[in-house]
Length: 157
Image: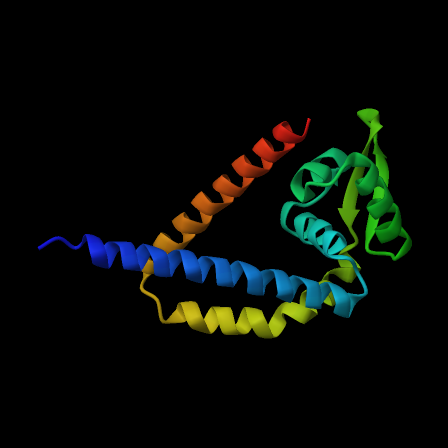
C-alpha cells in the first residue's frame, strides 16, 4: 500500500502551516513596528543591523529589498530618531557604514522578550535531531527567499 496520499496530505498541511506562520509573522512585525513608532522597513533594517553588525547602505538595500533612495531616506530617519549612526567609509568615501547604536538595543529587544521566551520553551521539548531539522529547513527557506528576491529584482529591470 502506497503512502502517497498520506504524504500529499502531510505536504499540504506543511504548506498551509507555513503560509499561516508567514502571515502571522508579518502581522506581528507590523505590531512591533507600530509599538516602536517605526515603519516595518525601519524595523527590518534595525533587525538586520542587530544580527549582522555594521553594514553599508547598499547591503541594507539588498537585504530589505528597498531602492538605494528609499534606504537613504530610512537611514536619515533612523539616524534622527537616534537608532543608528551613519559614517563615511574611510576606505571608500562614497560608501556609508550604518551601525546600530548599542544603547538602543534593549529598547528594540523588549517587544520580543515574551515571544522569545515562549519560543525557547517550545524548542526545549524538541530532540536535538528535530531542532537540527528545523534549522536546516529555515536555512533552505532563507536560500529560497533570497533566490526569489533576486529573480524579482532581475524581472523588474
